[in-house]
Image (cartoon, rainbow, N blue to C red; front, side, top):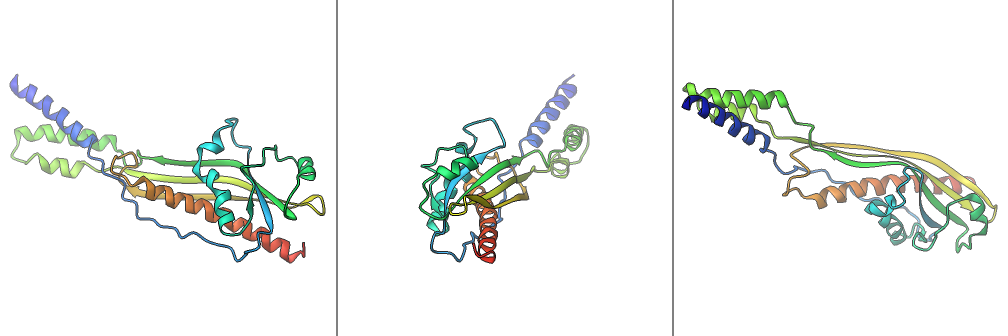
Length: 233
């Protein structure tokens, strides 16, 4: 009877050990923030139009969106008017807008997901096998740590930034949209460890993801500027 109780106890102990052996996220990815060779603020940035979700607070919850206008103004790319513009981004409304620059721009958010998945490295079969072998060592000469080391595997985490967007540029002189181009972000990083671990450097993850987002939008502004220049607009 005692052997049965001890065997069950070892199974539970091994299961607890194996399920809690996750470590902090080992995140080493870096991204360098880009800049554009424009310093005369040729347009205004009105903000982001949410066409992705019915949640009216969605854009306000994301640091990506809240800080973008301020950043591009700091780079002298566009005058940030996102804190002042409260319209619905209709083209008819663009005609009545009192702009300080010839061009006004905004970005439509068609889809945006920045998520992490800590279950990528989970292996229920290995957990069961490790628990069984841990208990089995009670009746063998095999040290208990051997099967634990073999069968326990720390979690892996998949960080994802997926999005679909569209940049619009309105010409206040021609009274028309002169640039409207869709673009996307598809960035995935597989890391060892768990994002949810209390020792994970979430600031490093946030800074990387925000830079990837910023660079993608900046690339699209570069294409818009090139288009305007090529067409002598």
